[in-house]
Amino acid sequence: AKNQGHGSCVIFNPSMVEELRYHSQMLRSLKRDLDLGQLFLEYQPQIDLATSQLLGVEALVRWHPAGGQRIPPDQFIHLAEQSGLIIKLGDWVLQQALLDLQELLPEFPNIRMAVNVSALQFNQPDFETKVAKALKNSGVSGQNLDLEITESVGVLGSLEVENKFTYLKQLGVTLSIDDFGTGFSSLSYLEKLSADRLKIDRSFVAKLDASDSGQRIVQMIIGLGQRLNLQVLAEGIETNSQLEELKALGCHEGQGYLIARPLALDALLEWIDQWDC
Ligand code: C2E
Ligand code: CA
Ligand code: CA
Ligand code: CA
Image (cartoon, rainbow, N blue to C red; front, top):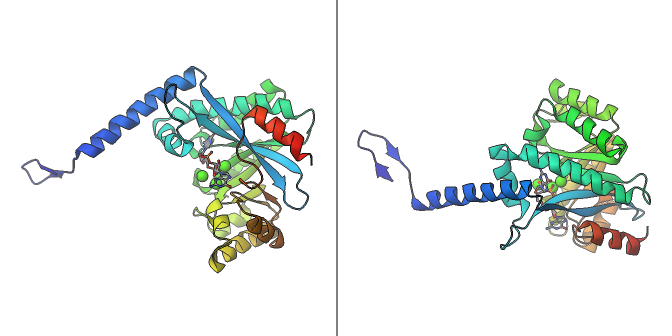
């Protein structure tokens, strides 16, 4: 802490400067690699838990800076959000995912491509028209696209958010609420919610084996989904007992390492051949 002499005290330490420098460097190289086309996507299968049928894949962005180690999205997505770069990054993700989707459509005409959309991106006034354009340019039907948004997009059920939902739904696009249970949606808004699917956050799935309270939360979300007529997808399924428990609780859909890790497009196509469902 450095005393400035007139009563104010600026908290200032070297590690914060280091961190700022590190982050601004990281952001610069992220920007550069995005421009150079050096980001890529992996796809994690989503299946019907009752039949094991492949329903869709979730696109997850990957960054491997030249000469360095892979940096996980948890470390750069929020930087991209803070700086606004997420808009450009999100545009690229959507376009790339729709491009890769075309490899899957001949064999799986009803498959859905789930794309993560950050709140900042979703709340841009031109977001929905961008989605419409991306669909048109790729020639893919909106019915093959699922957008994963979190409760942080704003008040779910509010007029503004609902208007976007309506527009997107007219395109055939479906909406999933990601990380469900970790946000702040009030029950009265949920009542009005016109999303299609709740994704149970993996922190709750992880607790299924261990505790009763974990099980109660999962049970509650599944019940809520049934009551509101929404699909429920559990993410982060890692063990057979979690899978069995989820099925017993009536969860429709799931994804997780037990089924498949996120895979590059080629590896996904191989996985699909072997899965054969
Ligand atoms: P998310 O949307 O909740 O994605 C699920 C994360 O859980 C992914 O981490 C996935 O690899 C991981 N995962 C899947 N199955 C399992 C499992 O069985 N066990 C465990 N421990 N983890 C599992 P990832 O790829 O590191 O992504 C982290 C987060 O970064 C995502 O969380 C999402 O919030 C964000 N993200 C990733 N790609 C994008 C993107 O294209 N756009 C935006 N806006 N955010 C993205
Ligand atoms: Ca997601
Ligand atoms: Ca999640
Ligand atoms: Ca997340």
